[in-house]
Image 1 (tube, rainbow, N blue to C red):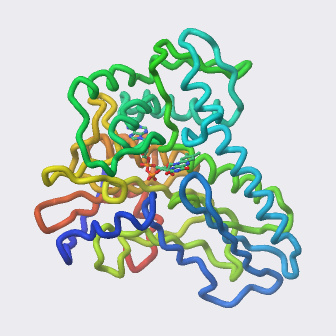
Image 2 (image 1 turned 60 degrees about the vertical axis):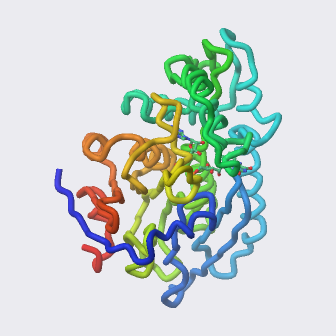
Length: 363
Ligand code: FAD
């Protein structure tokens, strides 16, 4: 494994003040019209709200295309469908109904929920449970789920942490393919797909746009998770800036060119509260039923699918740095980790698979 390290000096203590800007890691999109349009194409941009965050589409369409309004409608219809299936924040969504269903019985599910759970299960197995969508009870207990509460900044009692942890185990969730169905062996088991479903949403919207013949390329972003296909309206490759948790180097940790790939991040510096000088983050260590205690503060993954990139990014927040790098090599995914090296410096570690996407100035 080849990796390189870049040392940052922190500017003002930490720029944790970025924390409340958005629920996801912020990405700065550098794709927007920096050069003139290539003949025959124009750039179409639209955005909106979904999944408790924002979405943004930048598409390369035929000149004089009339698809603008209908594309937005198509996209929002599909996003709404996904939320009705995958959102624990919607009272009667499919996932909420499954969570309150009885143990020991097959619960028929849509192909969306099925595909997300199958992908999550595969990553749970590969990470020995560092990634585990059955963290729902623990996420809620610590105040980071649909039940809310994190802002009270109070730590849960030890026996409650223990009880929540007992419900976390991906092996207690059985999956059937035909017809698609799920079964839990513990009625308290609660799934939460927040660490993978935004990525799945990006993949699904990208697929939808790929099938529109007037669209020749697009960048799809939901809450900081991104995937691209085709080319920009000026004919160049898509470029994505990945925000650094510190404010030097123009606020970017890296800039990457993407062709047909996805990039997703996870971190402990956006969604967290502080207690007795410790950062209590929304990323849960499933083995403890409690927020991770780690010096890794952000991870970014490049992969073909945004769903897997999204999930791997969270998994790499839970695993130690060496394990994350080893698994990234065996899975052939690009990985960048930003960790707190000492009181006043951060270390950035990127593997070769990540480095090959870097824009020249960062090589
Ligand atoms: P990521 O690192 O990608 O994911 C972290 C989240 O994953 C945690 O918050 C937790 O829920 C879960 N998690 C923690 N540890 C693990 C682990 N070890 N393994 C697996 N999962 C873990 N938020 C709102 O406030 N309002 C809404 O209406 C709303 N609707 C949503 C609808 C959908 C369909 C989805 C998918 C999410 C929604 N959210 C909503 C959640 C919000 O967007 C989340 O903050 C976001 O999904 C978490 O993404 P992230 O990039 O911040 O962190």
